[in-house]
Image 1 (cartoon, helix red, strand yellow):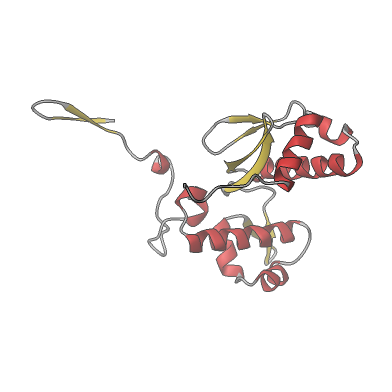
Image 2 (cartoon, rainbow, N blue to C red):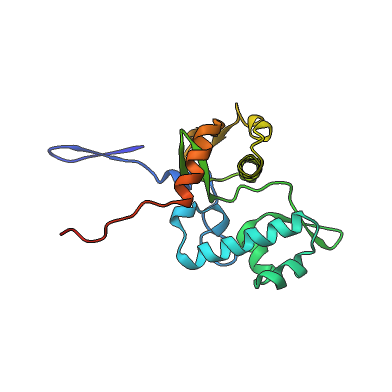
Length: 190
């Protein structure tokens, strides 16, 4: 932190926390590395590319080839590789890394409400996906055992906040009902 003295007050210069300890520029293109950018700083085009790239990454992690997954999603393999940094070349083939640090926004249930959080670790995203699957099973069958294994699971979001996943059956049912029956929103003030 640098201090700049003026006659009446002191201005503190706080460097951009986003850039500390990170390589900001790509050596080839001169552009900021997209896979390091938080979701909130992406342009609409970059968000679309990230969503498509994450879909390709999920398909590759399930066993599909990179080229096949890219064709199905409609994005080039080079774009996916550059925008995710989640692939490594092994014996001439592109293989997905076990996990990535790509920021993504996901919905969770917490304290009786559905909220959106930004997570920047695919391991947390995977836990959230498994949690939603367990909630779906509970809502369809009434069997709470699948949800109970998430009772003490905590998720750390991209800002460092800790979130505890909702496992109370009554609150989960209330959340599901509120989604199915959205409230009427008044758009005019008469």
